[in-house]
Amino acid sequence: MKLIPGDIKVIGFDADDTLWVNEPYYREAEDQFVKLVSTHGVEEDISAALFRTEIGNLQLYGYGIKAFMLSLVECAITITGGKVTPDTIEQIIGIGKGMLQRPIELLEDVKPVLEKLAPRYRLIVATKGDLLDQERKMKRSSISSFFHHIEVMSDKQEQNYIQLLHHLDIEPCEFLMVGNSLKSDVIPTINLGAYAIHVPYHTTWAHEEVDWEPDSDRFFQVDQLREILDIIS
Ligand SMILES: [Mg+2]
Image 1 (cartoon, rainbow, N blue to C red):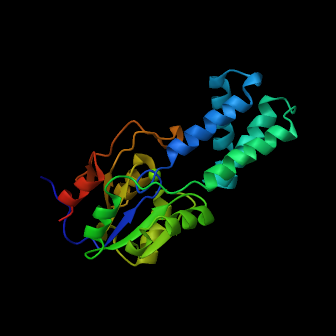
Image 2: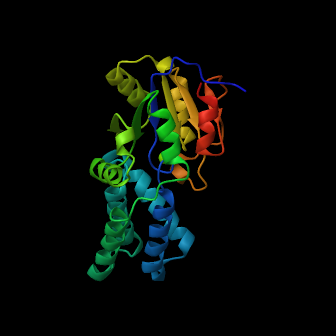
């Protein structure tokens, strides 16, 4: 079996849908939203309008639940032709607040895997999203003690990882990234010379989807998080 060499110093874990459940909550919220405004269009059209609104706002708002809430409100105004009622807007805000208050649901094997790796490597969390929300989730997660620190990144492109490695004061070949997104966790880190393990999750946001995998000796893929222990030497 192909193994990751022993000179890895830092392992970065993505958070959402790698350590804990995230995307299914967005899907549930979207379903609630579609029901709320369903008198103004068919489900597919409303979902497509919401996706367009979110992508249009990414540059300004970044990722996370609060940005999502603003996009929900904007989308409701657009698809109702400005006729959305204050009551409906209140319910939309309620959907977002509900998301922010959900308990943390750790994914399978997260704790035992971190327990095994923490004594041997410097572990960090490298995540997109809203700073306050990600810190809240980490605090409530019962796994914060395993991590050296949590890096909330405005985006996960090559440039963002170069900055991260610079802060960590390590070479790309000393960094391993573990995450569920080929686009955000794997491709940029492989491109800059680091190692990456893809742990797919059953639900992926359309914006994170790519239909190709990197062709590299530094790229690994597993079905279950616990399998990463078999390839980290
Ligand atoms: Mg993720």
